[in-house]
Length: 544
Image 1 (spheres, rainbow, N blue to C red):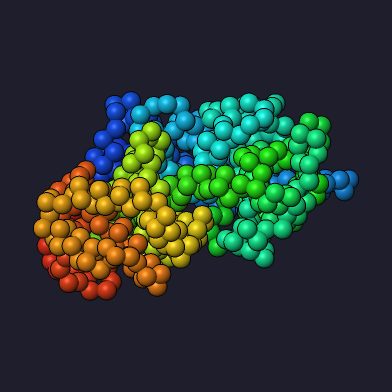
Image 2: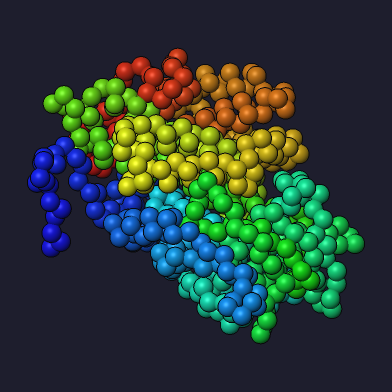
């Protein structure tokens, strides 16, 4: 048995400090997630194994190492020859090894039922511990359908992306046990307006050669990148291999981004210098081709903030369960219960909506596909607007310790804004949602049917839905896009909770988000069911 730290010090005895959490199973100690998923026994077992691996105390320490020892840009070797490589701390590779081995990117494409929801749960748990390694895996997962449909590509690309082996070696894709894929679309002059891209592609036999720059290249040590470049027929999607047989492709790393968060993972600026590439999709159809990848990465960016919120709230809940003030545990104090319960409803609603959307991914039914298209945009927007608010309130629950790097809280706070920016910031997402509903009648029908399906379950929900439709049934003004998407997300979250979550949680969410008046900040709610909400959301501790 490991000796315990010494609490008897020279000037005082350490008391009233929470014990180290130790090993946790991130799946088994999350009753809300398990009830919402209601997966098969095999899925529950697999998620339990992954949750146990990611929840070990040693992985919490590894996450700290991966984020404190930043990726290192290695442009040249000792002789001055170009390398264009990035070196990572071993802890970062360890996370990728575990997640790839568990099928993080591969499972949804192996034919099992509800596999995209299982993937979503893995995204959710990974982001509770070390979010940075999720970036290359999100892109790898999302690239699979695009690569599988591409004509003329060597089949090792499609096979390597769904491998359960992590292989970080510097070798051509055909010689590796497993592959990861990145994405490089954004350029300085256009940002999210990728049609303004100036990178050029010229034919080279059956392949192409690319010349130009990319302002953001995520995960630059990936084995290949999906990218956009101009041809004589317009903007086209290409696969750019990172390594060639016996040579390095013309991908020049310029610098690594000095980011606020997501520190363990590298993001870079690159130049293509006559880089070999293969066309993916029809010439001139680059945006349409890449949109499918973006559609799937948006699922990950909707689930990641739910994981960040869960991690922050678990830290706060552990703190208040084991700390007393004025002879009373913090968790037993009504105002603290109100704050934590209100924050927990933000997390639970985001989780329920994200998993509800994930269930519709991979379906052959047109109505499911339509709901996935509109639902993922709404889920991404709402979860990412809530995540920074929940995280900072959870930090405040812990007082000064929440601001100290000895805890995971600063890392979670730095990470909280990221997924709201990646794959479409708030305005982009809301305008995309309006365009989808206007141009895609199937998406509008799917949204209406999903909301109609929850009518009659709760009078407060029914009244809120009636108000929503009275305002927007004839159309949504662009200036009201955020308000509309937010209300859509709250209604869909309530509907998802009513279908699958504990009744106490669903009722409290509907009452506080769609019903009675409340204050602006979290915890500014009428007294009621806070204690029962916390009992359902956290396995640790009793409340009164």
